[in-house]
Image (cartoon, rainbow, N blue to C red; front, side, top):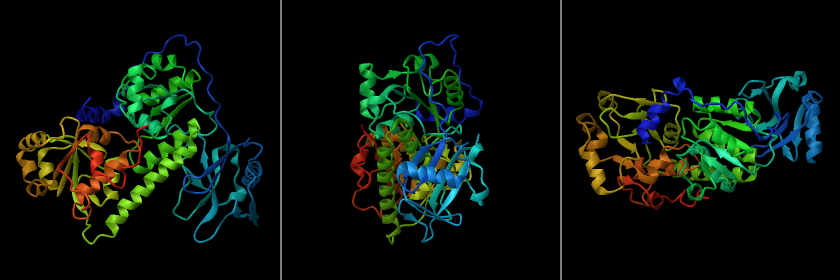
Length: 453
């Protein structure tokens, strides 16, 4: 499926229902894990300790704290209802321990103003969290509000979107995969698994096959929360006692990082998840630091389109493309619009971007293809500053495929974007007007982030 068709379909999520037939009888199903009840100690930087406990018996948050610290052999100091220290981490310097909870059927953390008066028995998750005034706790529930904790280490996993498959690859857990959607083509080991038959193809991204998923007897199924059909699938699988996690849609950098963490916790690869997230955050900091320290860095008006069509699909707000653009001083000229939208040619002209980046799988990264693309541009595109200054870039081939997927590799697209927007800042590599299968040749900050397991 090409990028335009994919995004067109994604824009209709609210009216698309998965046409999935349910067998009358399902045999040999595996029992799902019960909803875990417990308590978190959140030390920042994705460093979280989970303690399973009966919240009815530990409804008092201070008793729950004492129980969690005893079971994990942590020190703890509480003075007149104020938590001063947990496991050597002291309140002070703008950071403090505070109580946060998630109510049943909610996705949102709430900071409890009066921990002494808080009853935890009706909460899904509770945590003592070490943060400053602006900080929020680490993600603890999936998009359906189900706790991500309490699962046994998975031996057989299924992923139903390329983004989720990419996350499992980054965790070096491809050996656990027994099924994916048909569009999952990264990392290389997944492609090899498809070829050998070890990893089954379980239908397409929009409508995966219920029967084929069940036939693989997975320990965990990861569904993509951006699709209504996956919400339906998660409910059906849970209805017959299959462990199913509904991941977040990947509409922002934070959502992608949270999905990496969730997958790691659920399958028992939480240490690797923290390592992957840490390496991504270091690379992001280095890229941002280069911009911050440069005299030549400035905000750049940019348009991100899925094709060079006269009336293209472009990214608005609430997409990870918009988010990574902002992170590298790109000002999305269509930010006032929501998610991926189809605009007309007059809007292209009126927005007058200084840089246009086309994210596509319909072209090859050659001078001939690039010239063909440029010749096809409408008069409205040709009226923009981007065209006049020669700042139209084409991200295609493997790089274009990468751009369609909110997976850990977003940080490599971020570096490519930074180099396209700010060639006067990133002068170590001369950035061509098109990148494809060779996109790693134009990376330095993220070149050695190996997600290809």
